[in-house]
Amino acid sequence: MSGFDWPALMRAGVQGLRLRPEEFWRLTPAELRLMLGQGAASAALSRTGLDALLDAYPDRQRGECDE
Image 1 (cartoon, helix red, strand yellow):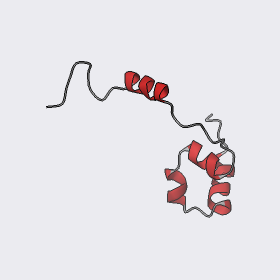
Image 2: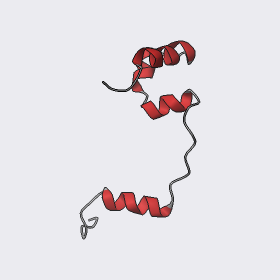
Image 3: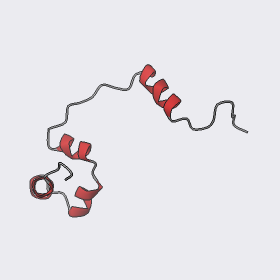
Image 4: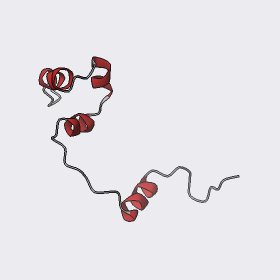
């Protein structure tokens, strides 16, 4: 079980928000929640948070440089 009430979410998106089905299915759950007024605005990413993401998901290996 996914934990999502898909029929209710689809009704809210298609009937309530007037989204076309393809628009609805392209949304992430977080985007849909925000559009429905259920998502809290999050703070901007701090430099510390960005550095943590860069360490966790580097674009290249340590020591590798652009040529």
